[in-house]
Amino acid sequence: MNIINIDNLRLFYCEKGQGKPVILVHGNGEDHTVFTEEIEQLVSAGYHVYAPDSRGHGRTGADNPPVREFHYADMADDIFNFIKALNLGKPAFYGHSDGGIIGLLLEIRHPETLGIMAVSGTNLSPDGLDEAFVNECREMCEKSSDPLTALMLNEPDIKPQELENISIPVLVTAGEYDLIKKQETLTIAEHLKNSRLFIAENENHGSYVVNSKIMGEILIQFLTDNNY
Image 1 (cartoon, rainbow, N blue to C red):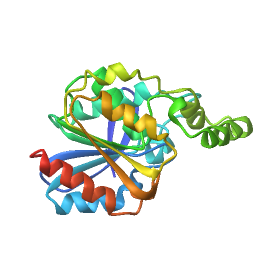
Image 2: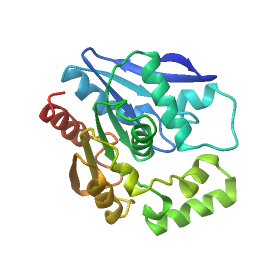
Image 3: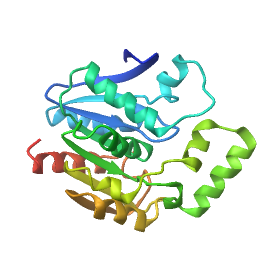
């Protein structure tokens, strides 16, 4: 893995392939290895893939001092600074779960940093999460005070109207049985100016993303359709 220092953060990332840049950002409690299939598919399709471990996750989490709390805005700024430090221009971006939140916030906080984006299993606020999942997270926090679990219970706080300022093409996906409420996914797609919606039938939150070729095929088709 490669390392880059960004605002006192040692950010680890996987880099593979040649061609137009595509950034992949994983979800809460994961690391870049959830994208093993997507990385190989994108490289085979002629893309240059960058897959970082977000702050608090994977090698990045292990190699930096522990913190008491995390914020999605900080993670979005990490990716913004990552893009600028590596001179990636306006790359494509795919974020799963928390990675999707990071992507939306990146474009809200730093408009037109990206050229095209895809998000899957993404919510605008904790209210967009399945209630049973929220209750599980609360129980986990009571037992361990895990700052990453607390993050999901307290953030994000993205207003639907903020999405209307995002003008780049955005693919919005979710599983038919996702832990994100269906209306939340529809709201995201409806408020983006240039969105495409895809619901993966008979799939849950991560089944079509982790160790699966389904999301990679969908993503490559979306990039191709938009001449990226």
